[in-house]
Amino acid sequence: MANTAKQHIFFLDDELDVCEATSRALEECGFEVSHFTHVADCLEQLRSQKCDLLITDLKMPELDGIEVLREARNIAPWVPLLIVSGYGDVPTVVTAIKGGAVDFVEKPLGRENFLSKVESILAQSTVADSLGKPLTNKEMAVLRLIAEGKTNKQVAHLFHRSLRTIELHRHHLMVKLGVDNIVDLLERAAQIGLIELPAKQGRDEETQNVELES
Image 1 (spheres, helix red, strand yellow):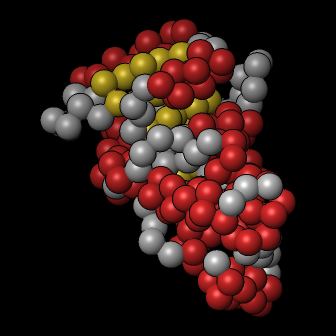
Image 2 (image 1 turned 120 degrees about the horizontal axis):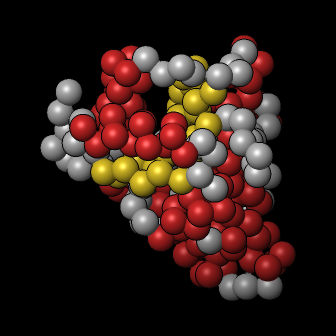
């Protein structure tokens, strides 16, 4: 297998030997790899370095993989995440996928299957190239209020900011999530685990209100 794009992969596992062996396999395929044995180090680098795929172990002493997913979603919502574990079961898989993981693989890792899955995820992930910086805390707050059905005017009132400021926040959200309308914004944010959408009927009514009054 070959990859000339030099995509950057983060690999997180509390076992150093697993990190080193997996990193070697990925590097042999042409990927750039940063491996971490501590969650905090991984998340810190995620804030400042380009990352095309985050692969994380499920069972770790600091945070488990599901919690890492939640943290990573807030830092870099466009980065796809792959969960790896020797303790996989159906409920865990479901939780991981709901948390934003794009896929789930069990240990021990079969080299060809694992590398094929990594390449497939990276080939399908085009969102990262069109996105800018991570969402700010203010943008996350605005996003959640939009998901609740609040109009720009209502959000501006709640934050004691001008309507124009909120409109700019919404524009930045759309740019960062690679969409051009409010419906796709909410669907994309829900897809990657940033928000949870209400029932479809209620969502349609709320989205219509936001579009009409924004």
